[in-house]
Amino acid sequence: MPELPGMGGISGDFGGNFFKPLLICDTNTEFLAAKIRGDANIPICTLQAGESHKNWQAVEAILRSARDAGLGRDGTFIGVGGGVIGDISAFAASIYMRGCSLALVSTTLLGMVDASLGGKTGFDLFGVKNLAGTFFPARHVYMPMASLASLPLPEWKSGMAELIKTAILDSDNFLDELVSLAAAFPDGSFSGGFPPDFASRMLTSSAALSRCISQAVRFKGAIVEEDPLERGGRRVLLNLGHTFGHALESTAGLGTISHGEAVAWGIARSCDLALALGVCPPRRAERIRALLSAYGYETAAPHPLMGSASGDFMQALGSDKKKRGGNLSLIVPGEKSAQAVNTAADSFMNTISQIIGI
Ligand SMILES: NC(=O)c1ccc[n+]([C@@H]2O[C@H](COP(=O)([O-])OP(=O)(O)OC[C@H]3O[C@@H](n4cnc5c(N)ncnc54)[C@H](O)[C@@H]3O)[C@@H](O)[C@H]2O)c1
Image (cartoon, rainbow, N blue to C red; front, side):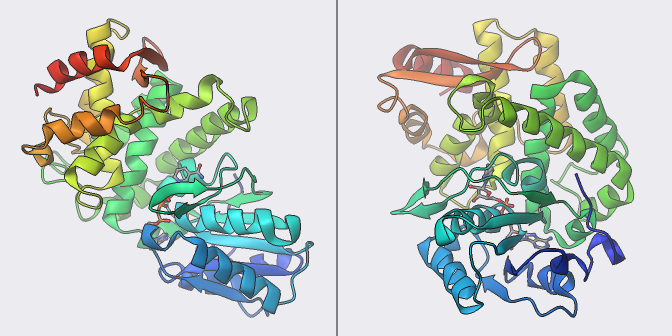
């Protein structure tokens, strides 16, 4: 995991290391792209920030900037930002002149531990997330820890949930590391959600955070190498907590709850399901739930935001079944790591209603 050299981990020399680079960023990461550019004469394409701008217009803006700057197939797109910038820069790189080089400078925790790895590119189309995309791995991925200093709290929450998910899939040692990180905060720090000084404290203990990020990168890297095009196998385990989480997000109303909080709650529900199916020892399920609670995530069911919309939740959860011939596949923690459980959607639905108490 190379660190960008130079002041604060982000260097003005860096952009010049690439032949014909184009820096791509959003309005919140433009200052980081400018630091990377330094005094070099490198074009910057700045896009609007956020998921609502992960669209074809953004891809077109990148392609236009590359054309205007005279980049050929030997040029390099350098995406500087979180998962949104990563996904669209990578997609644009995969189609520009039938594919140019790609480097990613990941500036969110979620980008570092998840989105920048694995070669998935894409953008949202016709209201469907990531409807269009390709597989196009970056040649270089950089993770400057210093860039996290400006990351807003909700983005830390999203990233930490993915880190916890990865630790569950990986090993007890990784879980221990996250327990120690939470324990380094004063008692009660997470009682009202993430404490305002979360970022500064995490970056103060940056050796521990850096170890966690490296371990997550190693883990996801190994899974992706086994199955670069997601044909099956272990890669599906990375969805732990996501099916429940997505259903909660759509029930609560998109944007009402952060992706990370929804995933964390989804992991707690996966623990419940694993216990109901007898595939996870109670002590392990309890340990996972305790870790989620230690970071202040809501783990109780039903989620307070579900209100009276429990029917919508079950519908959202079951909406996959059409695609899978009436069967539902969910990832649950096992004795070690996690496993996929498949069954007729109707029978799952009964179990899940009981678990959630709706
Ligand atoms: N390709 C993959 O395998 C993969 C995996 C997981 C998620 N994703 C995608 O990633 C996206 C989510 O990524 P994300 O959570 O990083 O969101 P994001 O890219 O939208 O970043 C979150 C917010 O933080 C801002 N930001 C980024 N870095 C910053 C910094 N250092 N300082 C201040 N602000 C900063 C961004 O401008 C944005 O407003 C989704 O679109 C999802 O589909 C892709």
